[in-house]
Image (tube, one colour):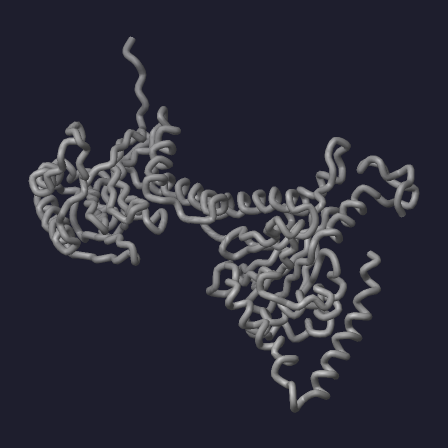
Amino acid sequence: MFRNQYDTDVTTWSPTGRLFQVEYAMEAVKQGSAAIGLRSRSHVVLASVNKAQSELSSHQRKIFKVDDHIGVAIAGLTADGRVLSRYMRSESINHSFTYESPLPVGRLVVRLADKAQVCTQRSWKRPYGVGLLVGGLDESGAHLYYNCPSGNYFEYQAFAIGSRSQAAKTYLERRFESFNESSREDLIKDAILAIRETLQGETLKSSLCTVSVLGVDEPFHFLDQDSIQKVIDTFENVPEEEEDGGEAEAEAAAAEQGGAGDQDVAPMEM
Amino acid sequence: MTKQHANWSPYDNNGGTCVAIAGSDYCVIAADTRMSTGYSILTRDYSKIHKLADKAVLSSSGFQADVKALQKVLKSRHLVYQHQHNKQMSCPAMAQLLSNTLYFKRFFPYYAFNVLGGLDEQGKGCVFTYDAVGSYEKVGYSAQGSGSTLIMPFLDNQLKSPSPLLLPAQDAITPLSEPEAVDLVKTVFASATERDIYTGDKLEIMILKADGIRTEVMELRKD
């Protein structure tokens, strides 16, 4: 797949009908730290892992408010993501100005996708190296979309992108059928649990993740560290509580986590 | 040959009066709710007061279509500011933005006579008064619109703002308490309504304080 004679330009097709530069751009998305989105009928939750470059630096912001009713989580080249977020904010403001009503999410993702497509058909440009999880609420309900560097976009009930996102996706695949009817609190809990899956056994702390919510009668906002920690405490209490009584339970829980850990090691090769 | 003149004007005056008074920890912004054109009344229930940010409220009389357009531009610019700086605009910042926005259309102005009221970064009341093309000044109180000529001399008498030319620079903020300032505003509008045909119907008062905004409505003469 790598290093062949058809991958220098984005405007060069391979004999098998592929644009390698675009596919390489999608690889960049997989290198970024994980971002997760879930939606119910009335709410959308976006969560991300706070990974810092080094111990000395702070982590990069991966979730952006686009408008009161739209938020976006990114994975990949954060700089590209920042620029696209600025574009989305500008589109949203201009739409509100002209039509005195909030921009429907579906329209926004199409414009974003078209913008990405342009970069796949110009020899002097390169594709954006960022995947975007766009979550929003409009008259037709709550939506979650994923925008690729290729210019494609898809709607999801729940999705995860970035490194070790397969672990989160496996978790979400088990649970997604119930999300539509989930309460706001359950949705947030599922998002944080999905984040935990990507951490590969690292203890989950509120400082390691960023969570944002938007919904009917609830404009986009970030959850503060205390609220996130409270949710974490509801399920991270299992090892602490049962010291005398539920030793078997604790062991079983550890074994389950160990087993899940083994399964999750394999996808790292991507 | 005499110069040809247009047989229509892009502007209209919808009348009305706006007043603002700054206090030590509050700001009162008031405007009547009558919208008129020529000698006719368009509506008795139009608000000329617009909240731009948590601590900045704009009141404008003049051509309400231009006022609406101006307000929309400022609202969008405020959203951009919030995205970039992660906080609301302060009143002095909004004052400068309003001035720049007005001057931007120096050669086809917004027919809007503005009074911007709010709380500054220290929590003290501030009032900024404008002309149609953006010239502005921080004052302790101001009136704009059709009743301004009736109201301003009375406010000068009651609030005695020291001249800005005096040194050392003195605070223009009135020492009046908030209920006294609100009462003054009601008195002043009741009087202006008597003699200005374009002012009347209802008086809308917005009181801005650190903990939030309160609105009061008072009936005015409807003739």
